[in-house]
Length: 173
Image (cartoon, rainbow, N blue to C red):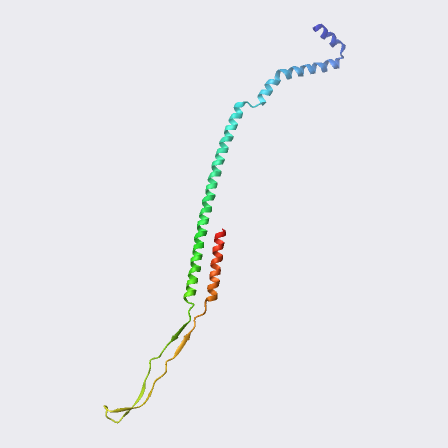
């Protein structure tokens, strides 16, 4: 068999022989070193398992952080809502107080003031203290002051409209 190989090689030129020899050497090197090269560049299942476990741990930690942030957001929203509700109640209390004040002061009042009556008398004195006659007497008429408090009906209507608008605004939120 090697006889035939030598006869075949005799038919080639020297440059063809060198080329055939190079092809033969590279083939032998590839066949012998190829599997070890492939094994060194390929990940084994153990390495992939380790990487997978580390990524799973990272996912778990990130999920915990997301849950913490969600609870912080919910707490913040609750506090904000509670503050808003308390402010709305304060506003409603103020509006209700303004309505009550306006309704209470919506009355027209007339105040009559009388100055004390002064009697002016002139007594005729004839020198005797026991006998005296009144010659004239004057009584002043009482003075009347009218105080009219401003009519708050229009203001009460506006306050009640504002109250209903605020209540409607509270219900929509």
